Image (cartoon, rainbow, N blue to C red; front, side, top):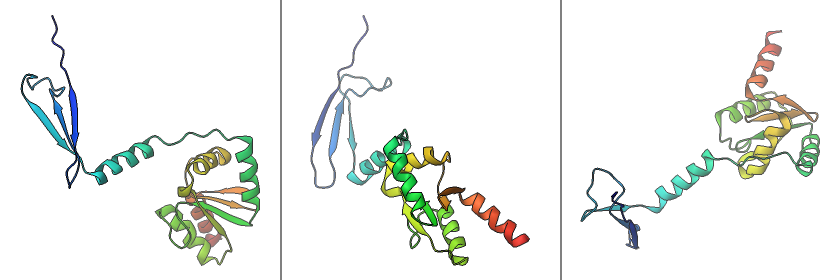
Length: 160
């Protein structure tokens, strides 16, 4: 007859971090009779693990008619609009920073929207533009491209 392991979990709070005691851990090389395994977790690490899980399983968004209408209005609200990670004052991505530096060096008047503040917006824009990455630059209501396309076009203009 197969032996079944019985697991129990108890938690006690300590000043430093919660401690979880697991009796009869599910490890084949440890006997289940009298050994136990203690595992200590700190809240910052737990928070990091939760944040990592959320990042690794992003929200999937189908572009609803309402979101499409909103995005149509937003991209036509300014002559040049950049959807980016961070702000033009504090870009939080090297690619976003590159496009900001290009626009600033050309004295372009533009507005930015930080896509890190709204996951539904971020995922919806990917569908809206059929472009999977950020930044996304819109000029006169039309999707122009991301960082690579912006750099390529600037280099093309400078080469002419």
